[in-house]
Amino acid sequence: MRDETSEAPQTLAAEQHYQKIMDRSSTDNGVFSVKIFPHHLRDVYDKRKYDFIERCLRDHEILVILLERMDRLGAAISATRASQSGQWSRTSGGGDENSAESSVAYDRAQILENMIYIGEGMAFWRNYLAMRSIQYVPVFYEQIMKGWREYVMDVAGKMDVSIDAEQISNDLYEVQRDALSMEWRRKFEAENKSRSLEKLYAYGHTYPRTIGNLLRFLLKKEIRSRIRFRDYT
Image 1 (spheres, rainbow, N blue to C red):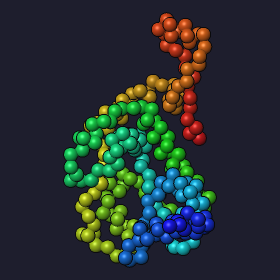
Image 2 (cartoon, one colour):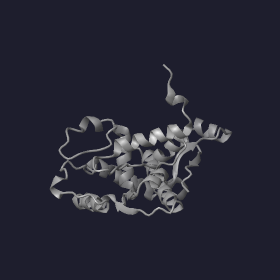
Image 3 (cartoon, rainbow, N blue to C red):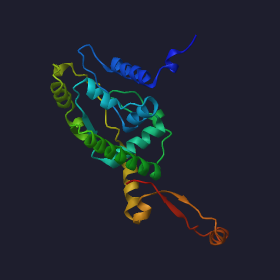
Image 4 (cartoon, rainbow, N blue to C red):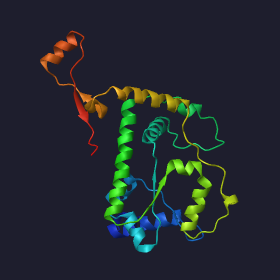
């Protein structure tokens, strides 16, 4: 049997993809919501050759909410733990999480990369929204966690959706912050206080194969490295 989808023009493939997302993200009241990370927008464009947000703007009146966490280090630590354990969320009343956390280990370089990656993502969104002249509502993660019911009611109101506060689920996502996270934070902060500017941003090293480094290796002395910088600008 011939696969018609694989032979469809790029525009048709993009349309099918867009409609599929709309169908899956919409509810009976005609409202839809989609959570998008920068890499989602780029992946869709690379594979389907269309800008999902721009397409939504053509068809709908949308509310753009830019969610940010003020505690960048805390976000990076959470991301590092999640990528190592595979556990990306924690809900109140959840089960035993010790098994998921048993494989995690402190990694300064990984935390640093996540900090920079998160920063790059926020910079991308601000630039993208500015270039598209898209108005957005800035929301901070910390504010939601302090008053999440009020946040849900506020967003519903902005979309003209009637909602009863008592109908909002109590199964809330919890902050993944515990003694282990605090331990990693203290260690990361202590390590960075004494670092020079170049080593503060360093995330890896290359070791030039020089005669001097060979002699240092044989004499069991520290090998001179060439610090590699991540392009964070």
